[in-house]
Length: 308
Figure 1 (cartoon, rainbow, N blue to C red):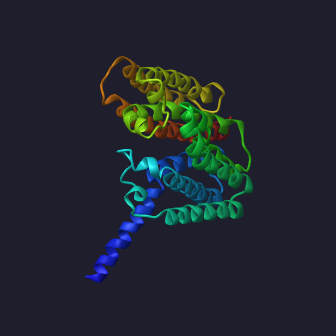
Figure 2: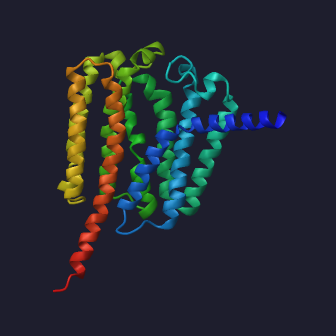
Figure 3: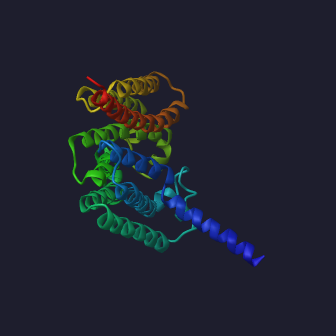
């Protein structure tokens, strides 16, 4: 019986620490970083970038998530969406979470400096600080434009992957940053509309709380239009081909459809449907970029090897 209890307790503790890392968010971050690595080179990225770059960026993102849990534990205890997190429920202590976050950050930075490159480590560190400290401690509570201003930290993963593979920040990498930067407001504001009562209860000035739902819906539409424009630029600049353009166009029409519906309809389910679509949108957009990249390489190779 004692052994059984110990096993169950250990499993529960593991799950609590795992929840601290916000695994679904981190998986999306790591995915966009990996795509950045592969887009950066004509073939395959260096093995150290794929292995240690991915691990280092993922561990840094997990550390930032744990720090976010730590700093937001007071409001998390009030909000319905977050009240069952490990800190509000007492499953983990402040010391445990701080130690865990510190260890993740230390391992991440060590790994990136020793086995990837110093520039990736520096940019990853600033991204961690930007989200975990500047956004969580200050911007989140200071202005309804918190998501817009703080979006730069969340937009960094693709360029981190690019730098891990090449050691430099290239212009094409900044396209990927712009994608996520402009995607973040409509993505998060859709969730904020759904959770506006929670944010109001803890005095977090999210846009739907400070300026109302209608105003927020207009902003979602405006940012979605900007996102559509920016996501066509890789094709217009020659970074990507027709395959990407076709895929991005379909995805953009879907996002615009949700944005216009949000503006015109009062269906309470729409904000979360838009939020869910936005996640799929970003993942598939990056898949189209990656597939198109290798299609372009294959076509180039075929044109070179054809006789005559």
